[in-house]
Amino acid sequence: MAVDAPAADSGGTDDAGEVLHCYRHPDRETYVRCGRCDQPICPKCAMQGPVGFRCRQCGRLKHDPLTSFTPAQLALGLGISIASGALASLIAGQVGFFGIIIGFFAGGFIAEIVSRVIGYKRGPVMLGILALGIVAGTVLGTIADAYFLFGLRYSLVFAAAMIAGAWRRLR
Image (cartoon, rainbow, N blue to C red):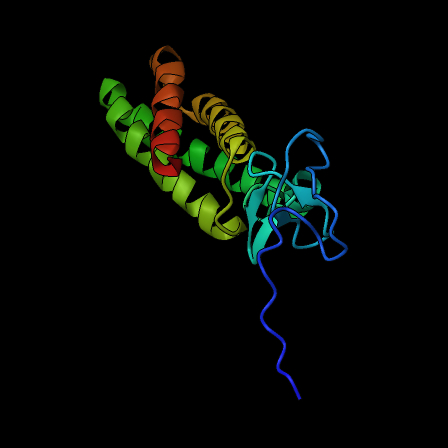
């Protein structure tokens, strides 16, 4: 009984002996197939997946857990950022111009609270929730503040400092 010799390198061919070409670039020979759909892909089209190379269609995430939100998470994050922004605005309204310093650190603190409560989300939606909530909270805090003229003068600068602190925390 003879032992079969190992198969030689196929050199860009499949099991039937045909030359493989990338499904998106028919002029390119390839040795790689998608790990999910088994289409031939060239190195330019290949995406590194969790268990090997994937084509562009199979390599895309259907649901990115870091940047997708449920409606409850959106509402909770917005509510917390509005309430925290209003509280920080009330506190900063009492110290005047130095509220800018408080605002920067309050923005980072607000970002940390919202991030922990809604599950450590990232991305532009998270920054939008924080910015919208901080501005709305600052407006509410300024209205509630007894120093209308003094608080109104610095409210936008204070809101910008809080947004800068929140952005710094999310980077």
